[in-house]
Amino acid sequence: MDRVSSPRSSDLDQLLPWAVVAVAGAGLTVFTVVWSGGTLGSGLSGHGWQAPPFTLSTMARMASDGPAASWPWAPAAAVYGGVLGVLALIVLPVALLVGFLVREGAGRKGLAGRRELAPLCPKGVAARARELRPGLRGREHLRPDETGNLLGDLAPHGPELRSSYEDVELDLMAPRAGKSTGIAVPRVLRAQGAVLLTSNKSDVYAVTRAERAKAGTVWTFDPQGIAHAPRTMWWDLLSECRSTEGARRLAGHFVASVNDDTAKKDFWISAAQNTLTALFLAAARNRAPLHELLGWLADPGDRTPVDLLRDARLIAMAEQLQGTVQGAVETRDGIYETARQTVACLLDPEILAWVTPDPDLPEFRPDQHVLGQDTLYLLSKDGGGSAAGVIAGLADATMRAGVVAAERMGGRLDPPMTAVLDEAANVCRISDLPDLYSHLGSRGINVVTLLQSYRQGTRVWGEVGMDALWSAATVKLLGAGLDDADFVQKVSTLVGQRDVRTPTISRSKDGTSRSYSYRLDPVLPPDRIRALPKGTALLLATGIKPALIRLRPWYKEPGADVISAAAKAETAAITERAARRLIPGMPQTADGTEATGIPGPPGVHLSKPAADGGQRGAAPA
Image 1 (cartoon, rainbow, N blue to C red):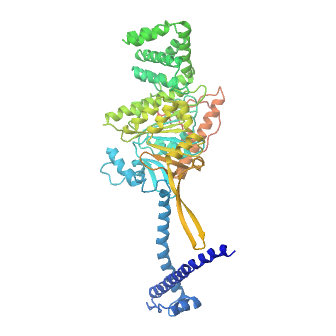
Image 2 (cartoon, rainbow, N blue to C red; image 1 turned 180 degrees about the vertical axis):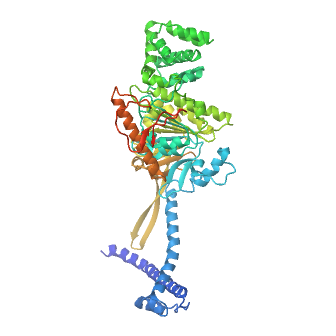
């Protein structure tokens, strides 16, 4: 029993002197604060700067009778006010210092802090913007949105972080984790130049359309009625097919829309793409309409496209198509049937009308769109009957037009173009998107690809393609709900490890000794990455330690009430248009939809299509 109690007695003996020193120091500090504060209060109140003696007897009198007893000539309120003032002067700097140390402690725990993220902070990103955008040089004050894309705030207390306009971004988040409210909508609202948005829902369109209409023309490409927008534009699908490269790219977009892994093409898929390339090229070079091209596909024995290719002096392409037509009947029919399946969406007359020249409506021109501040909404359903091939073709044509315009400007678009590819794996399968990422950012085309998971991207671009997309993205945001165990483990490895100090206490009859050992623990274990709360994201930026950020949803930003009101009006208009389409045989209104007598929301009306091709839809009266 004595052997057990002896070390404890020894511990108390060692701690007792330190306890006495601590109590004495605390008492002296309190007395000093009261003594100086009371004197300050007496002097400032006009009752003299005379201070009581700085002695133990004064300390005892203050403890027994209170501070006011040492300054009987001054009001008690003045004495206590002076004490509180001196206490605040001491506590406030200490609190600020502790807060600073706590904020900086996040970096020491393995994640980036304010110092490591300096290139993404306001000063760093503003300096980078002046280098990238010639139009900003010489200006002393820049608006935040002119300097870069808002990512969010460094958790837990800031500052605001932005990526530069040469960054390209990949965001992985589960459904309802904040992709639309925290990323897609803010990017569209804050964009400085032309905007391109793809989606399979109308939510982002409804929130942003009214605001973007203030910046420029709004083009709504909605062939499947996602927002039930009336057709007020058309795009010449074959305009991109006048070169062999353009025809092959368009054929690739249609093939990718039905092929889950573009990295794995069997014989039929590859042969169908070659055949489509030849047919697109023949139709474009001879200005044949799309319905005639569909007729060629329906009749493999039709030699018209071969003759048209010969007339256009595309002899090699004509010979290749003729070889397919004259091949074994089973093989030829299999190739043509595969090609027909890839462009099956064009059999729908409503979809075909959006990509067929219409003299009564304005034509959308990608080369003109990228030079202004117009907005292009590309809406399509996913699954069977999807117009994903058309959407991918138009998105690709617009981004490539941006590259051409950047080359004419000296290498970079100014103001930069914003391309938000929401639901890219479902409605915008650009097969070589990983390769485009490598240089789009350097051209002033800021691309943001939104996926629900890493595996979803693998299904579209294959393992190699998705790895290339991951590597090419200079900014990556990983949000809530990532349930792929292998991927989350890889992310945890990328975030890294940190040293954790573990104390070891040894007791003996001679006293107590303390030693420390170190071990490596993950900065963010996989379970913590999976359990990231909604509204937060892990930021991985090239050349910078990982950081945890808080997204900034559009509805929490200044001016959200105005945007929300416009969004409600637009949503009501979409609902009304949807109801009209469900009732056949009704007379048409001015905007081309069916009139039903269903009342619209107060202060909202459906206007006629804009003469300049902008989709004006529903607007406040």
